[in-house]
Image 1 (cartoon, one colour):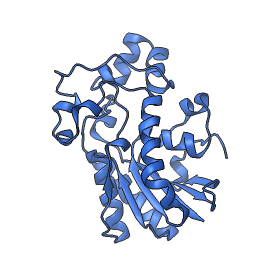
Image 2 (cartoon, one colour):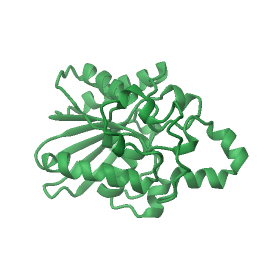
Image 3 (tube, rainbow, N blue to C red):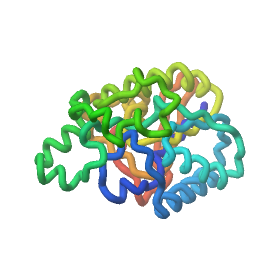
Length: 237
């Protein structure tokens, strides 16, 4: 038996501004830092000893993890992986979700945000928001950096990394992953066996640890959000 803890980073500056963030490397808000502290305290209360930590390359996920580790008094190194990054929103990157809803219609924006295989138009490589122009990704080969992604694209890169680097460790060890709404949504699709329709409805709140209890065959016995006041429907339990 083992535990996998998935946590979406605390509120970011662009979450607050309701902007499509994707691969843009924004920081946490003060509220986001408090969410991370609360997450750490709730994990500590559950007394789950964590062997391995993983995060995306992005600042908001890294800071969330560091705050949690500080609360846990755990100084282990953690692995950063671009494959755990948020979904790339293409030309929507940086735009306000509410304003785009008025311009394109709520249904169209929802399709861009949540449909399985629909992706926005590619973001120009000349844009300052394109990952090739962001310092965080300077060491990544340019050919693997996307211009836009669907949830399906995100799922494929996240799942490949999970299967290659994390899954086998879960047979015996507890693991925490600090990541993003769509990279966590991708992991939930796989672990909770959600179909393409259900995955589009799955909500991932910021800064709320999702604890997944796994048996020896890595089948999910139970899963729950630790902060009941901000829990979302997991659609399966």
